[in-house]
Amino acid sequence: MLEAIVADESATRIAQNRALSQLADLDLETGDYDRATQRYAQLASRSLDEDSLRTIEVKAGSLGDPRARRAIAATWSGHPSVASTR
Image (cartoon, rainbow, N blue to C red):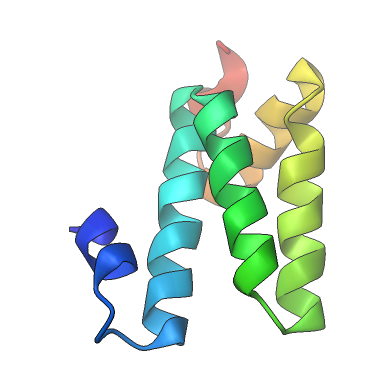
């Protein structure tokens, strides 16, 4: 569903960006860091809002450090145990 929104050219840019952000966050939570990196980069290139760009930068920056990945995944998922085993 989210991938369909991202690909739908009739969807608003805001809807596409939200869907892309959720997909990237899911990739982060599930441990698909390469895909998360790609999606965050794509999202950063599409975002104009400085607050959104900072959030994307923090998430993308965490991908290279296992401890940071766990902290970011736990923060955004709301479930510390989700990332504790990764």
